[in-house]
Length: 84
Image (cartoon, rainbow, N blue to C red; front, side):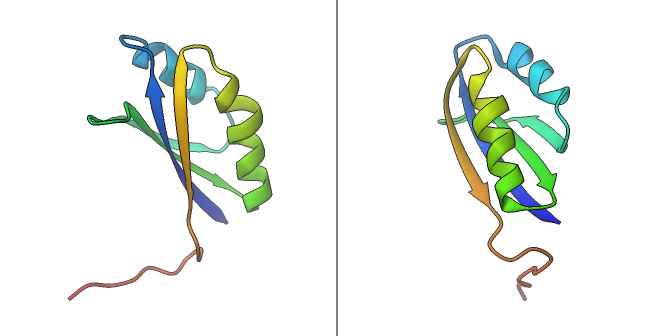
C-alpha cells in the first residue's frame, strides 16, 4: 500500500467546502485542518504511487476554491524510522 499526504491551501473561508468534496473520494483516510501556509492536510492510501498521483492530479486539484497543493509521497511504504 502506498501512502501520501497532501497539503492544501484554500481560498479564505472555504476549508469546510473543500474538505467535504475531498471526503467523497476513494482512498482518503483522514483530513485535518491545520494552520500556517496550508489549511488542510489529507492522508491518502492507494495501491500505487501512480494511482495517488491520479487522485491528486485529476480529482483534488480540480476542486474549486483550492489555491495550491503540495503532495508528499512516502518514500518507503511500511518503513518507519524509529527515534530514541
